[in-house]
Length: 345
Image 1 (spheres, one colour):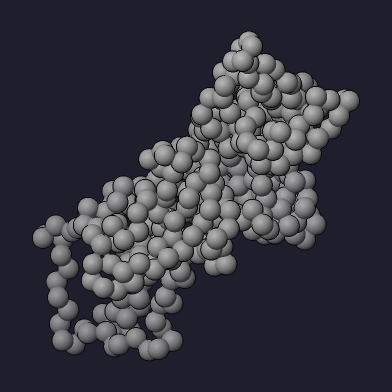
Image 2 (cartoon, one colour):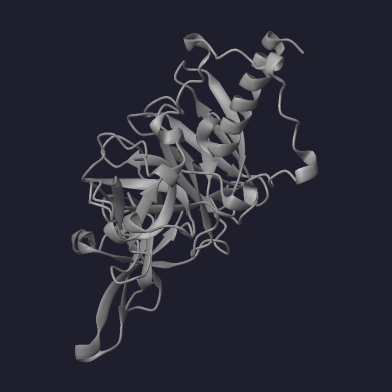
């Protein structure tokens, strides 16, 4: 084998090792679907530029025969929810940035979840005295005292159980003879370094969240166990380890919305009486256009915005889908952070 051939093989080997080491080197899909949440719904996310900004996007759960629609954000991102289970086949009908009608198919992934909260950056000192990038999500979609209320966000990496086993002694290639040594690669042959979002988080690079410090975001990703050999960064940057695959800003990106009927109810009597608003979605229909009430739960609206609801409300268009603990009227609570009210319908 001549030097040129060995050089080509060496280059291929370097490329293969690089692709194994960092999972995010591959081109990310435009859409992802999470596992089912506690309220029996999956979240569909389309990332910045996935669709035409402000356009209508229709989501179909093919397994259940259900449909819902939402508006894209000003940056072309999408967030929607629909009843479903992990593994359900979903179809997304949308208009791309060129104005052409498109359709994409995704499956709800068992390990993916959607979390929401305030994103912050710090650079604390590690045990070795060097600063370590620290990106944290202070969640507002769970109880503030919950174990997973504070997350430490890191870029995706390949898990240890995905790594190829080391070669056995008998599989080791013989060392090359002196005459077979490949020439050093020229500058133009060097593999490009991975982008920030594609590095393995063993070296603790910062996720690709430029300009999002101090903003509310939705993060699509998964919880992971910390590496066994972790030391300083775990202490200097607290929070459960969470691989952030994609980030959608509340300021420019899409927000989770749903439309439905609201009803004022009272629980208890006398001084113990509690007034609350219950809610049922009306923006999910089956193939015949009917609302599948058996698949859509009743929820209680919570948060300061509830005080602005009127007795005449029959339907509202909500800007949130964050499930909290059970409310005083006995239903699971959805945080109401904004709405458009439709009266007398």
